[in-house]
Length: 343
Image (cartoon, rainbow, N blue to C red; front, side, top):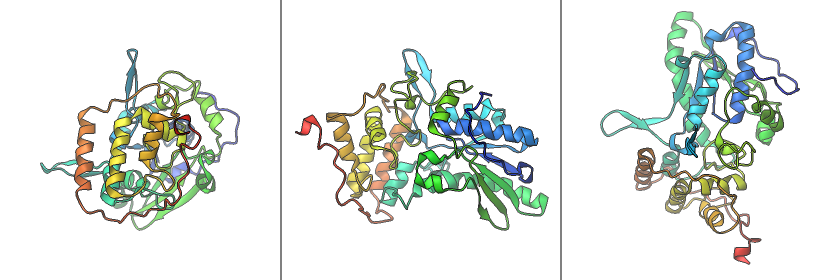
């Protein structure tokens, strides 16, 4: 494993106390570091056999794989699987989960997060981050249920689960306040604790770690796939995340223009704004006519999965929303005031 930059290593909880050790791998730069640190602790405690890694797939909304000059750069879900395997977790103990709904033929089909936004009628907001629960937390928790049912019967007590995540203080004030270790659920079936083993790692330390990492990081972090300059998006979550910075959103809008247009369609039909301060229609206009960063690569989004997403979103938009729009946007921040195109 790569040597870590000098920093204070957070003390691990007693891993031997848990029946299931569940690292959550996003495929981003932080989850790779987290899994390295966590698996070192699991190996020291002799409990690697209790580890199952999970990736909550966002499907089409994730950064996809791209091919540039004959070189293939993996997408986010593939990176999550690579992050799991790189540190000793067998392939059959890495689980990819996604939210589903009944399909017309009686099977189940992925229920995309953008479809959920269209059906709900409002985009997520600070203070109401329902996307995290709908697309990530609840689907992983549901994936644990069969194991919890079996183990509770065998053990005669609630099943003990340690949820391990790569959240860091550098990512924002809400994550800085989040305890490095806490209990998040206790009932008659399960006890779930949460551990953030790299909470005190700086962004610089994470990037330094990746210089000798055994797994690649997502191409979207660079100005172009393979550039190695960390001049792309600052995060690797939804391609168009309502909590992203303005620069990230502008870059994402020109890297995935068809996806951005689909978000704009939801915004237009529902009447809600993508963010409280910016409409995505304004972000798209700004990205295309003003000063968006050079995308480095443009994702065509022409495959059957994107076509299915369009159909699912448009079907949801024909129905009444579950919530009326909650327009916190009153005076949005100016996007184009200083641009030459609008002087």
